[in-house]
Every structure is written in structure tokens, then in C-alpha cells.
Image (cartoon, rainbow, N blue to C red):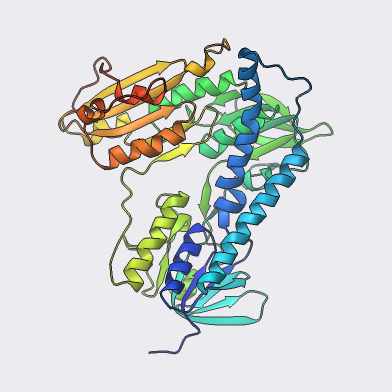
Length: 460
């Protein structure tokens, strides 16, 4: 066998790459991981974690409104953006340090720098005059925001990555996009008192989600003061002395202080040297892999967002575990992408697991039963708010398995994690009904829904 510097070399120290590197090193293998930015990747540094901190900060304004309905009063309550940024950055640095420390404790060498493939067993650390060989290589470089470079004035726009470090909180912002990142940041900025407009070229936000969820959330976020413009996109962005003028296809002109594009993310494969190692991309520009995460090069694997399979941090971690079991434990595994729960930290938030109604109608041969409820949560009883919760169960009419759960409302991300256990286990509607409710809670509605939506059961 050839003599290599490492048994495994990992490119990218995000959640997936770190987990794979640690597990392999703990098995006694010689492992190194290269990271060109900061350890922790998108989720910890410029994604899920700082975004959740921003969501929690922005929710306070709504909490204060509710509190007044319960008899509380607040004088001169205000939000200080620099104070929040400093606290957020300190915590992110702490978490990144923990990731780096855990790599060290496991015996993984951390290489600071951009790794580029020279051939199937060799990487070069750019600018460091260092070349490294490895028996096996794992690519876990994640994804990066995409924006339309051909749009006139696009150089004046930011993405989600810059949104975490704005020097000052704008008074007005326009967010282009209708996916979860766009919707989440719209809620963040609106909650912090920014005049917020969301523009999306499609007919409704959250493409790919259940239609009832999409329609319900669109109405609810407008109640929070977000202006939503659908079926429209930019023609150009013009910088003036007073701000940025957004010229839209429908003839509208909107001036804002910041324009943010949240129009999707793409696999981070640029200048990675994949062609030097025989690693191919698929039609979508992601690294092509088999079910066990092996690329078209026999000794190179890829996991996480760079493969564009299911772009969620917990999925990348599970793919890392499956990679380790397959390659180093002689226990071939691949991740099961069915019934993976996910959350949108919009305001109100969304929790989803399983099939949408449309997907279920296509896959359930004898039709579906649909149970839907909309109600004002008890929390808003004293406030005069007309915000409402949506809960929806989608049931295979033949087997009576609950194949989809969809929730829009407070604490829905927490509820959906536990609902996912039941969906993953294949429990039936009768088993859900046999579960005693916890009262008074919103979640009790999930086990007390009795009436099918009119005309719900139908084939095809």
C-alpha cells in the first residue's frame, strides 16, 4: 500500500466534516481537516446558530406587545444593535472554539487554509507552500449564497452572510426570495423595527411546502407588518444619495437602505480542483455521489450541502456517521431521507415532517384523509391579536398511517421534533387518537383532531 501522510483528509470543518474527522480519529486513524475560514461551518458561523440568536432577539418586541395585554408596562424599551452583535459574536467564537478543541482532543490535525485537489490522493494548501497526501479524502465544503450576478446594480445587494455583520440596523430593507432564509430574515428585521418588504417571483412563499402552510404563513407574516409582493422580481437596483431604489418588473419603485438577496444556495465547489481527481458534478452543479456518499473517484467521498441531497445540518451529521460506519467500520450504511423533520424559524415559526397533502395524494394509491384546524392560541387571549395557529395531519386513507404533520404557530419547531418520532415509526391515526392530551396546550390539538376535511379522501 502506498505511504500517505494521512489515512483521511477532510476538506471543510463544518458540522459534517468535523463529525466524520473526529469519529475516524477516535478509531485510531491519522486524520487532518482543512478549513479556509472558521471551524464550525455555515451552521455555527453564518447560518442556523447566529440566525436563531437574531430570531430570538427580534421576537422580544412581539413578546412585549403580548405582555402589555397581561398588564405589564414598559417604559423606554429599546434595542441596541451593536450590543447584540457583540454578544452574538462572542458566543459564536466560543462555539467555534469548542469545535476546534474537540477536533484536537480526538487527535485530528486542523489545517487552516484552502485545500485544493491536485489528484485523487493529493491536496495543496493554497498560499501555505504545503502539499498533503491521503489514502481517503472527504469533501464537506457546504454551500454558499447565490445571487443573480447579471442583474444591474447587484453589487449593491447583500446576502445572508453579510446580514450577520451589518454595521448598523437599517431603517428600510427589501429581501428578495421566498424560501426559508428569506422568510426568516424578513421576520428578524421586522421584529427589530425595520420597515421590511419581501419580494418573490413565485405565486407564494415557501415553495415545496404544503399549500395550506404557505398560504397561512403568508397571511400571518403580513400581520407582523411585513409587506409581501408576489409574482414579481427585480429589473435593476439603483444607488442614489438617499438609498437604494429597487426597480421591479411590475413597474414599482421601492427605496430602501439595504437590499438582501436570499434566492438560494449553491454547492461550494468553485476552484476545488475536482476535475484533477476525477470527481464529477451532477446536473445541478453538486458533487455526484452514490447512496453511500462515494463520489466518482473511488477513494473520495462527499457529504452535506455540497452534495445537495437534503441541506440540513443534522442530515450532514448523520451522513458523516454513515460514512464512518461504511468506510472504517465495515458496516455499510446510508442515511434514510424519509420523514426528516424540519423547521422554518419565521415569525410565527413552521414545523413540518413527512409529506405535504399534494405529495401524499400522488403517493397514496387509495387517497388521503386530511385533518386541519385553525385557532387563536390561548397566549393571545388577552391581547386582541387575530394571529392564528394552523395544524394539519395528512393520513394515508388505506393504511391510516399519519404520513405528514404540518404546524404553523408558536413552538411548532419544538412540537415537530416529537411528532417526527411518531411519523417515522409509522403510527396510525388511531394510535395518535389513543394518546391522551396534555391540557391546556396547543399540542393537544394533534391528538384530538377528529373531523376529516370535507372531501379530503380521494384517489390520486
